Amino acid sequence: LYGHLPRGPAGVLRAAKWSLLGLRAAWLHESSFRLEVCLFAVLFALWAAKYTTEKSFQEYDVVFQEAVTGLSVGSQVLYSGISVGAVRNLSLVRDDPRKVVARIRLSADTPVKTDTRAKLTLTGLTGTAVIQLTGGSPGSPSLEAPEGKRVATIPSEPSALQNIAATANEIVDRVNVLLSEENIARVTRTLEQ
Image (cartoon, rainbow, N blue to C red):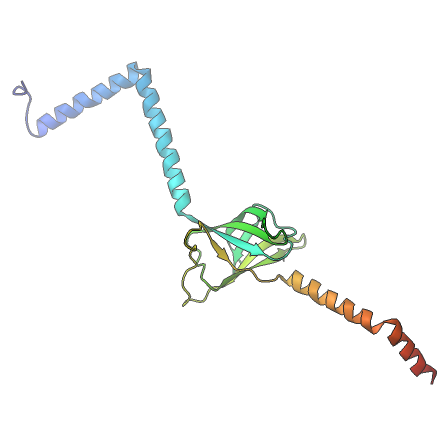
């Protein structure tokens, strides 16, 4: 049956020619074939894009114990001043609404270590909030998600604004004690003598 076909390289070339002619004929005359090829190409492109996107980023949670005024979805995440990612989602902790969870997405090559810390920082004159990551000593191990969880949590530190607000409240409390009716009466008695 197959004895009349050439063998060796000539046979391979002839078979390739007929295969290409068959593909060309199918492409020209069969619309379903064109549709299947195009659909396959689109699905492959989507799969390849999803695969590369997932591999080039890593997600983490940051839990803040303070208000995150000015921080929004899409806000930058900086590591030592360099943009390494963005805020993907903001939500309140169900059991404790005083806490805010920021889901961040960082470049996969960002060296997040167990001693890396996150802090809310304001930038520029407009007061746009960003998350600033600091720390991460070279000897520290990489931060990994605990077993049973999808993402790891980067510990947060109080922001400079929170520290200023706490200090301002403390100063106001001290001034109130200093200017109490009792102290004003003592100062008045001292000055009258």
